[in-house]
Structure formats: structure tokens, C-alpha cells
Length: 180
Image (cartoon, rainbow, N blue to C red; front, top):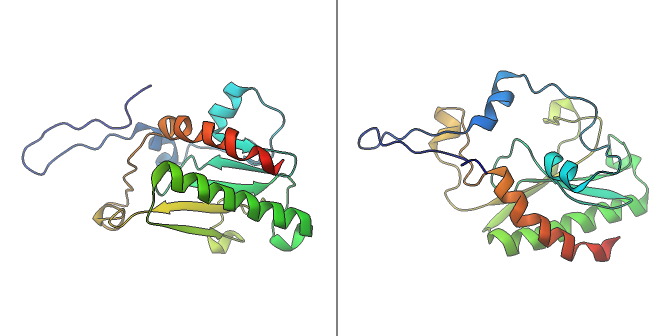
């Protein structure tokens, strides 16, 4: 696995941050090919490539390819709906059970000090995938955001996505099967 960052000593206080996977996002060349949440059956390799940690007949949990923090998850219903009101009561309940299970797993894997959990409904609310409802689950730690997002419009993620996937996937496989 490639290293997620390389530090080169450039003198006191001057390190180089290397995050090459972000270039597609920054350049705008990350063209979408269909809905990221509408999944057909997949092989284990396809699940890894798509960063899907868990899926069942009603919902799914996947890593955010462009995370705010390590462990940033997206939880979505399988049915393509753009609002909470468009889900059945059973789908809404299952979605919240997936969020709850995700919180338990992230607490165990990362020991965060808090979370941001929420839905961005509609383009104006910041929904990157406005046509398919999804909930963001973002682990947070004191001091996890410093000057970089404000001054340099850059987020520093402490762990490579592949390493995060390897850490979380066995936990989801083991602990979420009770929801199926």
C-alpha cells in the first residue's frame, strides 16, 4: 500500500504534505458515473474499490472518498430517494440503526472525542449527492482542525483511505450482520 503522506524536512517548521489521491477532487476531474449509493451486487474487490464497508437489502455504509476526517462515513438507504420523507417508516428506522451501529464501531476503532452526524438535504444545503439521501458520520477530536482548512483550504487526514478501510471493514462485517 502506498504511504498516505511523505514528510520531507525543509528546515524548521517547513514540511511537505503529500496527499496525491486528492488531486482528482481538487482538479474537478472526478466525474461521476452514476449514483455512488446505488449498488448492484459486488465482489470483495469491488467493495474495497468503492469503499463499501457494509450493505444489506435496505441500506449501506461506506467511507467518504473525500473525507473531512479519518473514518468519515456515509450511511444511505438502498432505495434512491432524495429526502427523509420519501422513505418508509421501516427504511427510516433501519437507516438510524445503521448510523447507531456506525457510531459504535467508530468509537471502538478510533476512540473519537465526539462526532458530527447529519444530513445535507438539497444542493443549497451542501449535498454533494442531492438526489440520494445519505447521512454523514464524522469522528472528531480536539484540535483535529487547525489553520490548514482556513488558511490553505486544505484538510489534513491522518490515515490513508485504504488503511481506514482495512481497519473498519472487519468490524462492520462482524458487528452489523445482526441488522440484516
